[in-house]
Image (cartoon, rainbow, N blue to C red; front, side, top):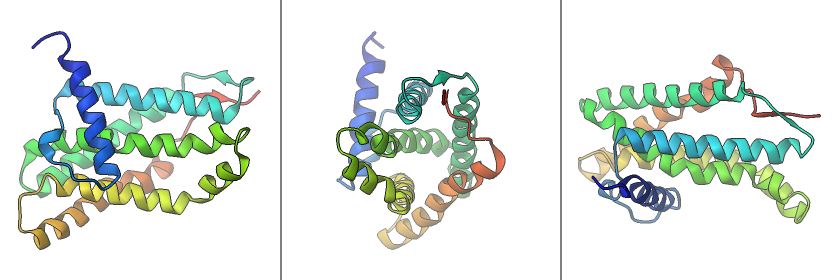
Length: 191
């Protein structure tokens, strides 16, 4: 492996994840799957949350390290449900590919989540419109997770989408359960 493999693989994962999230054609072979990529995607996701929380709480907010707990809990829950889905598919080796695909594909949703805070000064009407779209964003996330499972399932189309639907709902469980289990501590606190 050369020194540029990891950044090139990350760029490929980001491009493939964007295609999956925007419902464009994409193959599981478009993703580069290894533990380093999962770690890089986790770091990028955390960075998006740090910047987004800073936008949300404003320039006078103070940075708090407790935000790391929320990030670590999120990646742990994703890992557990990816393992559950892979075991249910009787292909344990799919746990890492499912986790990498989900992380790469959900980054765009994270950015959209923070857009209202970034646009509040420059385009307040657009910011309010995006902010009101919470249920649509949640449905989009579930659809992304269903598609994440679908590209990793080898089956006839009807069976593949039934399996992907069930697997995607399992992958979405942390979206519902995490607020009940983990305190959602942001990276910043207001002044």
